[in-house]
Structure formats: C-alpha cells, structure tokens
Amino acid sequence: MKLLEGKTAIITGASRGIGKGIAQVFAAHGANVAFTYSSSVEAANELEKELNELGVKAKGYQSNAADFQQSQDLAAEVLKEFGSIDVLINNAGITKDNLLMRISEDDFDKVIEVNLKSVFNMTKAVQRTMLKQRKGSIINMSSVVGVKGNAGQTNYAASKAGIIGFSKSVALELGSRNIRSNVIAPGFIETEMTGKLPEDVVKGWRDAIPLKRGGTPEDVANTCVFLASDMSAYITGQVLNVDGGMLT
Image 1 (cartoon, one colour):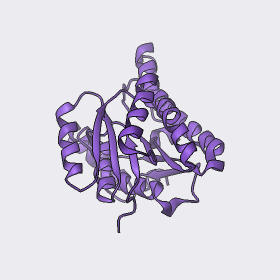
Image 2 (cartoon, helix red, strand yellow):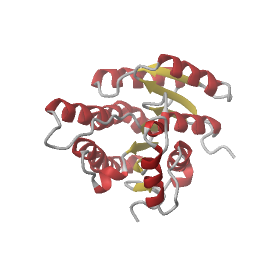
Image 3 (cartoon, helix red, strand yellow):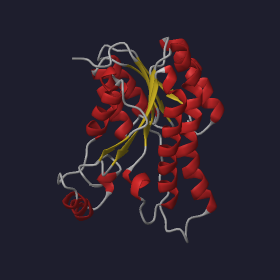
Image 4 (spheres, one colour):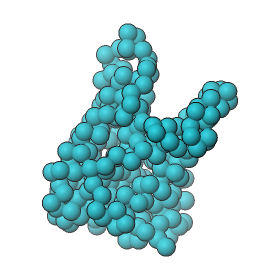
C-alpha cells in the first residue's frame, strides 16, 4: 500500500544519511520528491536517477536552506515544476561540537543559521502554497539532544530545541487551515557519519539503548511517512522520539 501516492514532498539535505533514507522511502510510497543538497552534486544526481526509476517524479536542487531568498526561489521552482507542495521535511543540519569555553562565536552562529534559521526560511517559503491548498504537513528534524541537552553541543542543542518551540507555534498558527506541524527527534542513527567512529564507541552507545541497536535512516523515514500521510490527520504540534528508548 502506497501511503503517499500523488503527494509532493520537499526534503532538505537529502544527498546522504537520514535525508537520503527519507527520499528513498517516500518515493517507494508513491510521493514525488524535490530534494535539496549543498555540495554533493554526484550523489544528488545518482539519487535523482534512482528515485525516478521508482516511477515517481524526482528532482534535486542545489539550494542553501539557510539563505532566505534561495528558500523562496526553491519553493517557487518546486511549485512550478510539481504543481503542489504537500509535505515539507526540514532535515538539513550541521554540527560544530565543542565545550562552551571553546566554541567560537562563528561556530555558534553557523549552527543556529543552518539548523534553525533554515526551518524558518523553508516554512515561510511553503506557507502561502499550503494555505491556498488548505492542507499540508510540515515535519521538522530535531534530535534527542534538543530534548535533553548534551555536553559539548550547546550550539546544536540550542538549534534543535529551538526547532521544537518553532514547530509547536506553527502548529497553533496554521492548524485552522489544516496544516500540521510536527517534530521528529532521532536518537543514535547509524549513517555514513557514525561509520567513521571507533567500533568500541558505537558499541557503548548501542548497549546503552533499550532496543540494543542504533537506528537506521529507514526508522526515521517510516515515521516521516506516517506524519506526512493522512494516517496522522489528527496529529499536530507533537514531538516523536525515534530513539530506541534512549529517553525513556
């Protein structure tokens, strides 16, 4: 059963990791996919080809969600190309970890800009279309770190906690127009990035998780499918922890 048949989704930061997993699962569920990437042109072209082979319409856009005008232009292009914007997934994000005493002002500003301001930019960019359609699902990627904090990640935690407050406010503002806004807070998800960590570090993390494994991009993607589909039509303003029980 294809839960997203005929819907068009914008997914930011989708050339690798969680974003790529979401794009693949969305296409498998019948969604047309417009995705953004920052620099990985080759990976983006490969993904575009792979998604189109699943029989949906898919297109990659080199666009920086942290830039207000680029976000506006992207939404206009996607609307022109696809005819609607039904789902927005704000997934683009970076880390610049350090203890507070060592974080530079630039490292703080950059993480807030890429992780948090991008959510404002893209939500603002799709808002008019969703208001006209009188429907839409906005899914913002936070983190367990945004819910509970983490030493050495004050900038990242601040950006991800900010996403939660922003999303709940959007849910209150746009609910009367049938536009839903929810948050996913992934835990330890195993991607290319975590693949570079020492095996004993990864094992320590896995052992501390009640389900005794790291999550996969598909675990996050499946939750996105639920929140993007009509199965979650009465759910808005919520934070879903996809973390194997880490925050239990």
